[in-house]
Amino acid sequence: MAESSRVCIDDSTVCPKSDNSTGSIVTNDFNISYQWTIGNFFEILHTRKSKLEIESPSFSVLGYPNVLFKMYFLLRVESSEDTSYWGLILKAFSPSSNDELNIDISHKFSLTSQKRDKIFWNSRVLENVFYFEKLTRNQCGVESCIALETIKESLFSSGALNVTCDIMYKENVEDLICRNNNNEELESDILNYKRYFRQLFEMFISVNTSDCTIEFGGRIYRVHKFILMAHSLVFKELFMDPNSDESKGNCICIRDKVGFESFDLMISYFYGATIPSDIRGKDFEELLHLADTYKINNLKILCQGMLNI
Image (cartoon, rainbow, N blue to C red; front, side):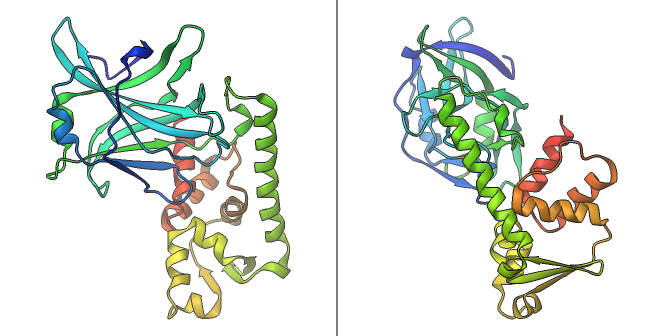
């Protein structure tokens, strides 16, 4: 059995879903990494059904406006060998029409412990989602194949299974392929998305709206608490503590030995959610260091994704 395979399946193979599952964002509020816990998976393994599909709650992803995603776990039986395995796929939908979309998006799956401190299984990076082909009435795409023994080894003592989907943020949203969606509507969403971040950046360059500062290398950066707290778990913890010097003085002093170029890139990311696609060398290494030090998880994932390109 291959670790992943490109398949087209007839729509009649879809079976009723299980509702005993929960989903949560585990990286931060920007939905880059999604954790799906299936509470009754031990019972599901013993249902003795030859066809079964389990559906996760829907979730959204930064950089993909007007798109909802779902994970699907499908029981597969190879009649020629009388063996079974599970297939794991990602699907994209239009929230307005619930139509399945064909989107190029880099993602990978893993089976982990509840706190994600242990990984039992990882898929390779997949580049597109499953989608419904209206002309042939088939579903097509790449699925990750997981052996039954691997599933059993990944179960919690409670019988639950933890599935994580890591989605690599794509800087150029214009490259998004969404063939079943209305192009004009998609372009309008992208323009609105750009305007939103432009307005945030205008807040940054307007000193009148600042409510805190960052001191670095003798320079003063006038910024906003809610922006820093939204991106950085470290900054959030500092400002949430009423007894911290940062909370009392509305100022953060950073003494990391990095250059102004990489530090400015971090500040720009806070207000624009992007970094230059051609960043390399020392600036890139220092930016990744800042992301790791201050737990700017989306920026860290974005940098790590660029390393794999």
